[in-house]
Length: 471
Image: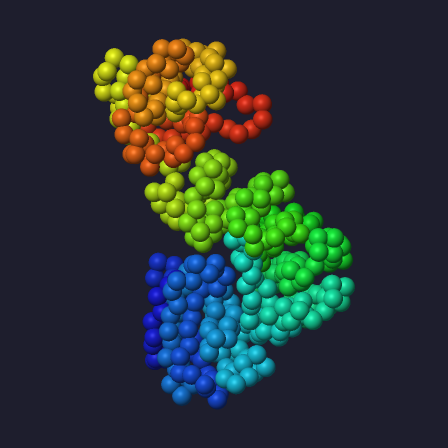
């Protein structure tokens, strides 16, 4: 969000001040029957968690003039007495915003350079019943809907709601058609897509308002009546940054989950497989990252994040920054993250550290004398492990047995191939590597950072290790 500088206009002729590609947009606000002397301005179309900063504009007798800095064309929101006024600004805009404080939607009007875009947006808002939204949280996915559509969902049956929803969409298209020649392409494209995506997402709203009173068979029947158009979801993949499409993706995931109980604890554990099975490319990445963040944000649980972060890092690394910032140290073992040091004792009684193998690829196997799957795993993969060792991979088998004697006895009996060690500090190990379940395996590259194999079917594990060794 760019800094807002409150200012008086000192010239009648508009002049744009440019610094390093940033321009100052002069904005005038005129309010009749003002009910408050404060107005706020914020960047538009951000997730709720991103709206951390709004800027206060003081109104004097319903009037203000100020300058807003922008680097590129885009949408902002004015917030007056809880009412949101969407606006579009480009580097040539000089908007004057006027309205009656007691009847904002009916009286909102724009003048000045760029007014055509914003008067269209105001008319579009009237068609959908204003800018007020209602948010529903479904299994940690937050989905927004228009307030007018919520009223329709509460009062109409499924068939009537579907008809009203289609009529609203047609009215939106009519407004778009009427203003097509006078508004910028960016504005037209944004709202044409928004109309389509909101139409489909709104079908879920009816289900959410009624699902508690409907049985499973009725829910399935009403889903057929409303008919969420999956082709819109699939074709919209190129609009992953459009807020209405992001909203539709979340709505589509919940739609697939119904008639299951969306309020059931840990329902996300069933929604995630639906995301993997039904969404692809960046759409799946967006839903995955959104779910990982929200699950941790709302519940503090790390299970989903720990199990999915490496896959997301490999498929869509651009989506992991926000997740890592959210989880912080609660996730270990992510690619490009250094592996925590491990203090160990080898079978000769000498001290060994993970750092001793820097410059080599290390394959760590966490096991214990009482872990039958661990021991079976050593037996089943003996040939592959030998191939890895022959090509230079260091196999480090780390026992988490509480007693040294148990480890030594199991080591002698089963003789796992590789460097056999016993962890000296289970408390630190559990914190750094999440050894709540074994067997557990990690790969550390030559730089001491975690690395991962592909999860594609038919993969050649040995060749993937060879690539790591030769890097």
